[in-house]
Amino acid sequence: MEPPSASPLRGHVPWQGLLLAVLVSPLTFWNLPTTAQLAIESVPFTAAEGTDVLLLAHNVSENVKGYTWYKGERGIDSHQIAIYLTATQGIIPGPAYSGRETVYPNGSLLFQKVTLEDTGFYTLQTISSDLQAEKASGHICVYQSVTKPSILASNVSITEEGPVAMSCLSGDPGISITWILNSQTLQLTDRMQLSPDHRTLSIDPVRQEDAGEYQCEASNPASSTRSGPLKLALSPAMN
Image (cartoon, rainbow, N blue to C red):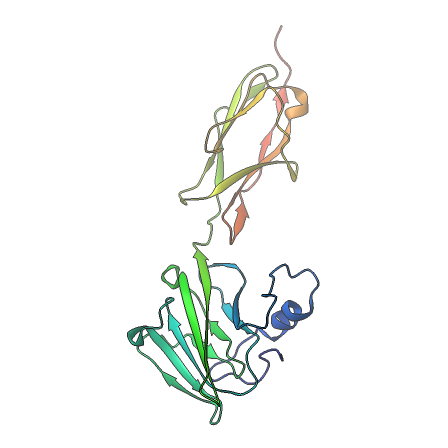
């Protein structure tokens, strides 16, 4: 199968290099069916809103006369995105066509600037010259882009052997929090405790080896970002 490097039906699409890497890279872990069945792969598997997603068609028959893409798994006419005719290389937009979709001559479908509402299943139906139909579905999973968190410390003047608590502040839902010390993932000691949501890090007592620059990283399956550094400097304990 050739990559969809032919001119698309609309717009400029900066995907040729990525598609080539997907098709030839030995590090691609997506497994094709053992038989040559029509299959759909989402590239990337998860995406941040505002990015592009390709539904890459695999094992397309050579004698295909046309493709029809639908939103959903059932192929309902009212959910039809577009019909592509191989003879004319023309597209017939359907009711679900938003103007952000590009159909390639090999049946692959590109979504530009995906939104959270684009999450869901999509179905490709092919019709061959002998009127045989094949159908396969793929899934797009779009996540909100993670915003940059910040850190707030309970005490900016810290004495060795005293306690400190640092909070990772973010209004994003459904994110994971990782703590960073001096650009390395923090290795928790028995003096450190994380809140159940990992947004608060408590150290008691603080010791000299805990000094350094702390950051928290907020992430979801599609994107991640780190806070600015908070420098934890200790003064000797008073006798």
